[in-house]
Length: 357
Image 1: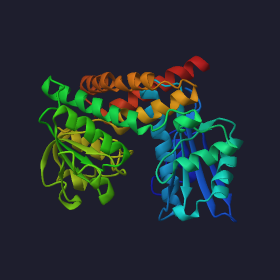
Image 2: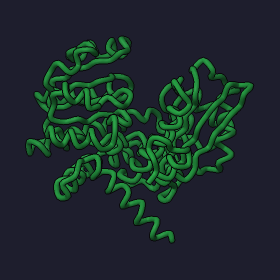
Image 3: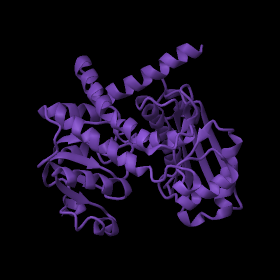
């Protein structure tokens, strides 16, 4: 067994059967990047490029490994013929320039389509277009450049239908009317989730560290709460839609809700203790890699050249049924919903590996 306290890079890859980890460097431009390719059994790996000024390079490595693995499970659960990948650009966003992005795109191009990228944290539409100048393996393009446009439309819809599946699981009725829902992070995705909830008559609370995001929803009959007081109230649904790690053992001592269903990646502080504690507390958790798959569904349709938003939304709507399947699997096997979703995803990958052997 690998000692968790003293793992090498190869140890970390072996734990979850990663295929490749690519390190990219250009000293002159200050470019440091890590591309994680977890699995390509179902098809080319897909996942966004994010830029972040990590405290340590090891933190960036951890993200590349964990996020690429999550993308494999997300694609598998969504029924896509795609694998999981993720790219991390390490450093302050002020490092970015046309030359910087195009140099990075050169590294992507060298992979020959094994990894397709898209826009993620701290990346812009302009960055994606600069990548496109050099490399064809990029999706999430604006409509005027042959893409489907804003993938957060589908992501938000997936969160919404996931919430409805969870409410149905608990109450036998999927209506969100008069249900108290707290959205933590009301940016591109969270703001659109708010719209769906208001339209259905939910009672919506919202918080965000960015006041500009709150300004965009202040006129929508939403109750704004301070970030420090987010755990002071009771909710039917708590929806983390910002960065990950918010569902921790410490926060679970304060969190008072029936359901957790949000768009943020890697919401759980860990994969074992937190899911088990959620089960003990009788909180129904919808794994993020299950219900935030609308974005990958959207860009996947670009990758296979099916530029049809209606098809994207129809496939995203199946997240409802997939959530019900996860709840059923978890109950039948007396395991957490997190474990159930992972097992369903892994089983599909394994079945396809056997077919290809």
